[in-house]
Image (cartoon, rainbow, N blue to C red; front, side, top):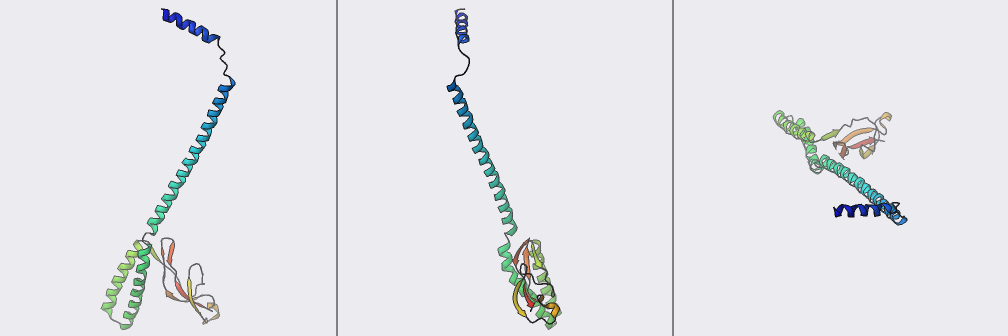
Length: 175
């Protein structure tokens, strides 16, 4: 029972004290509030920076997967060109069986590369020359006036891997 009496006396003493916080307590609370705001701002900035990092690395990874075959494709493009030249020569020789075998090998190789994202750039004789899409090898006098500044011949086929041009078509333009 004496404990209850002591507690009651302590409560009486506490009730007599001023319950208003003094200026020192207010400044400490304001200081702590300001520190919390600063730390929260730092946290939000760090979080936003990390989100940007994640987005950037995922974009880079997607681009890497998309163009991972680019080196291999550029090495194989001269082989495709050789097949085309070989087919043209075999057609001149009129060897049907050899032509049939070469066409089969050429189509298998081409189909395999197109499955991996390679696509030829369509260029037709007579279409206007575009420096963004074509590489001019030389200029020759145009056979007719309407072919001036237009493609007269395609020397080497151009190719794209996805949306990226990995080899520009080499063309001859009329002057």
